Length: 310
Image (cartoon, rainbow, N blue to C red; front, side, top):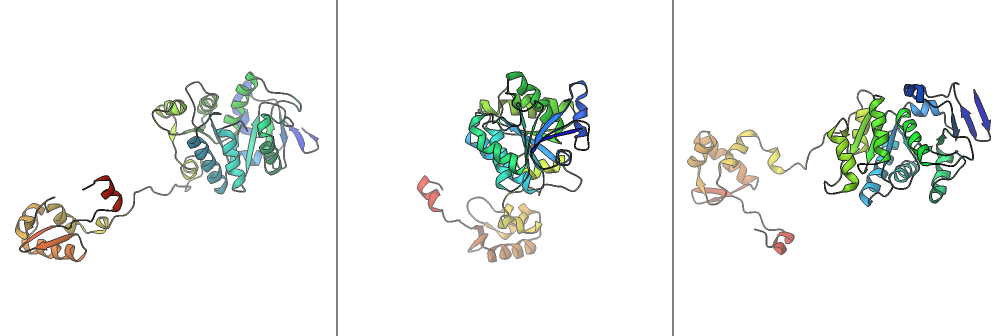
């Protein structure tokens, strides 16, 4: 049945009910109040929760915003709790990208809580969805926040935790997601940060380390939604063939060596070693000094010179 009051509606067993909430068993909500135009059931099919510390660091806020925007650009609905810190940053990232976001509240969907997020919650209601178990006008309590977390975990395909202490409501959401067989992910932080300690503990268990939206989508998405391969910058040395690399490695770090010494060390014939040395010379890797060959001396960059580098 669907009951409507303006743009607010209550859903329970009708077409819009997200069936994944039934995984909660006896703790399943008896119904949900929804504010916003999109279809909750359809949105929930491709949704990811991004949760974390309220008193997050600038790093945590940056990562949450980047994840929210990146997931939205990849066509995922970003779900969070509209709280200060990580939650708000995730919503803002999705909204800034022109994407979809939903806030699961621990109060009525017509109550602006926290009050400092009244404008943000209003934007989510206009562009996305506000969701809550409680009827309109109900205000949050501590236990209602804990109950809210299970809805976030069950509603989404996976939960990403960005900054959380050992005792954190975000970890409650993540552990609930684990029990329900959902994907559980964490964004690592400094080992010395207490705000990342809970995330690191999660990653030592069943959590999967992620660093951007593409890695999240690879885990929770369909076959073929792969994150791009990670690698460092391509150096000129990486483009050398195997023989050139062996000859280059055979040259001493300091001083010169003749072609026969290089050939012995590289395990090649003298003629091949000499040919490769001339090739390396043309590419700027080595210099010739009489009958000997040595590595090219690279000039110091200004920063190295200022630091006294050699």
